Length: 117
Image (tube, rainbow, N blue to C red; front, side, top):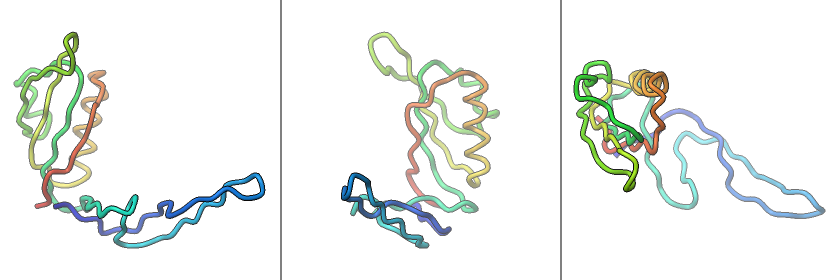
């Protein structure tokens, strides 16, 4: 499971009063989002990610995508989907993969952290 180490600000509650919305934000090192424990990756530790994109990516792109495994699937009857799975060294490597996908005009459907380490 992935784990968050750095500080984050998140909304813990909101209420309407006097025509406005009051939002309480709390800074914590580890947090619970939506009253459900969500473990997130650290910035500097490796983690295994699954990235789903709409469109086709040839297997030859694996090296450019940090060695991620590339498999083809179906997003819908009309649209192809590519699933990338692999261990990335850190968040900088994830950002590099995401930038490459952006440069290729491939819409990202989801990014999941499957496992830390």
